[in-house]
Length: 100
Image (cartoon, rainbow, N blue to C red; front, side, top):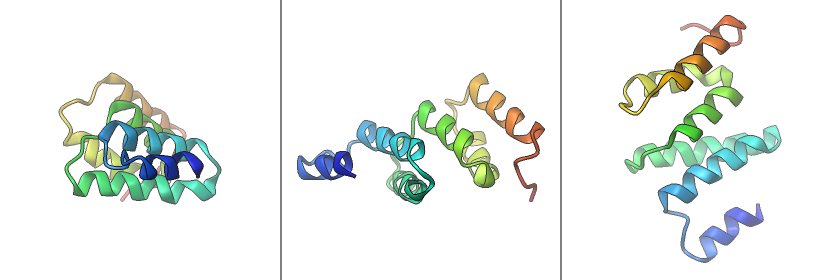
């Protein structure tokens, strides 16, 4: 996408706030963009960047199949609040998450 290319061009691709925004942007795009969102998110975790609450909520809301993986990350994150828990309850109650 042009926005992502622009962040690389001006040297902001490693900024944690820009990366959080890119993850959310890709999640809001078509299903073709979701792998890019996941790739940026995983890279953030490997580089010890802190995903923000909006990023976690976006991941939970749009990637329910991988919800258990992100749920485990949320359990380990001290910034988790009620919004995250309600997303998981909604996902699990609708039957969209596969249990391990």
